[in-house]
Image 1: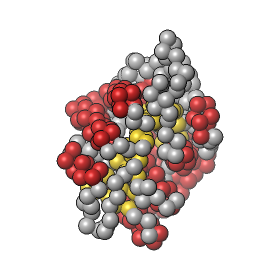
Image 2: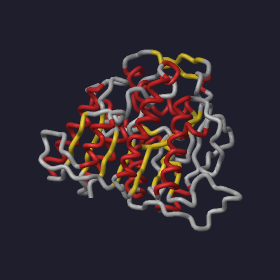
Image 3: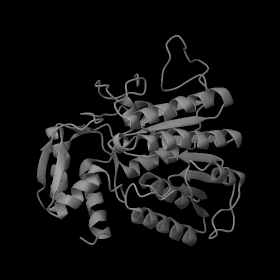
Image 4: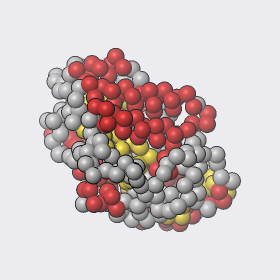
Length: 350
């Protein structure tokens, strides 16, 4: 069975693609290799996937295209081979949709890109998934949907009607669109609310990457809200283990769903929502201290006010996830940061 992964050159897309290939599952990747951050890292990830494919003889095809390009996407779903490096191309039966315009702060500068990519692009993918009768449509949502909610930990059964960023609003919109497709067309959809994912080959625009680079280069790091921030940091290997289990379990309609007291995490339609987080929130200053230990150097700290669109704390309740797949993330910050710094120093020869 071939799996289509949008955003395959991205941080999470790369790791999931790698795990699938290692399990012997053919992968079709789609990515536009945009310059939101240095495309060199994206190309390196793809090179590693192509090397793994060649060694294992498991097909991997990467299509350089934007999810806004409906014409090209249709060709992919029809089974047309658009990569000259590969000789075969199968019709995807499972879709893992990860491509999106990321970043909360960037949404203040370029809101149109979030509408075009995160909503219009999302619709292109889910509509084709419906048309070509995909067996399971799995997509990346975000902890950002919880917005102004301050009741911790966040549970999938909570209201998410008060986004504080356009990014969070687009992810909430994705969940609503997915439910309508599950209801109208019986398309099994699973939304995954990721909580601050980090690890080797991570995104250069994320705090861990920025902090590590700045500390090594003796540059200031910006610490927002005077350091009074708490995050539920999720190690990439844990996230991949969750996704690998979830794709094998398409949701089923809940015949006992109570419409008088609706549970936002599920439905009478084949639709589910899950948090994917570590459930062990860490204060930002503790996070930086652990980073300093691994780098062997103190950070030059610049304390700043809270940024628009940010929230002070996140924490996940993953009891629904653990009940569903028999696993939940558990990698400690100590181990996770150690692995990241080890990778960073090796990759950038520091």
